[in-house]
Image (cartoon, rainbow, N blue to C red):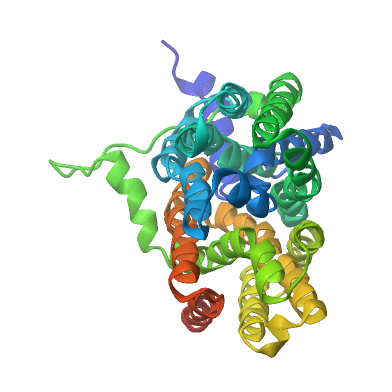
Length: 432
């Protein structure tokens, strides 16, 4: 047992650790060397690879409706199925990320995505495809928050927005490749072949992350902060209840309101863009899929540019999110006018929606990470993503049902427009 002066070094290290944790990301203030760019690259690739197949479902909408005899509602259910388990899985993943190395949490999740898709290529029909996508969502639950935490821990505040934007560009980046490749593969070899392709791509992502990811070296030099002493109250609240108190924090409220509306827009682009161009604007299915490719590419650019810009906005990182809300509201309102039936105007509006309606995620996730309580970055990311996941599950099916019942895209775009307008008004006022 040691005491006196021999105990001072550990207390000094503990104080340094807590000082770093005040930024919300232990070890993030002094990232080591150039390896952080390797971490950023592999996290981005794994994100793109794990979401590759699901991001391509919207581009294959015409093929899936024809080959499986689906309605727009059933097509929306496919997207909803892939996002159902993450409602709970993201919370579990956030807890695991605060306890264990991201290398294994993310790698195993990406591996589950790969195995599910490869095995799913043998399932019969629509019901089997729904089951496969449920399993894919279970694996993907760890990839999204895990990759975000891994990148955030390697980059200091002045570069974190750019890094998170590049990393979050993995989702639309995978969508760009999927929207270009999967419809061609489905037309040539059938929809089952697209599951094999998606499984192989996800497997590459799992292998790359487990093989290349390392924790920041500073994490090995400074011990984690010790837990605070127990309160004097006889019946302290459970740790889980303490963490759920984050839901009352103003920054988390802003994150959830804006994130829910904008993630709904992203879902709407995925399920409606190709069908809107094909049916409302009389664009051929192949050309409509290419427009979705362009919208996804705009989303890649948006996630990087908007996040990098948020690093330098004096009024705060959330300003970028407010601008996205405003830009998306205007574009979707225009889709409900005669401009939405013009092939050229509709294409331009959807690319605009891609830049802001997909690009918003870069600055948003950086804002969530930096607003997290000390030592709770993983759980805060998982919590925010789990709550917004409710919209990801419900919105594709609701939009498809609205379109099937009304035989028009106007109610669907109108619902999304109203959501973003309300979110803009509420969060801008709360921010002031």
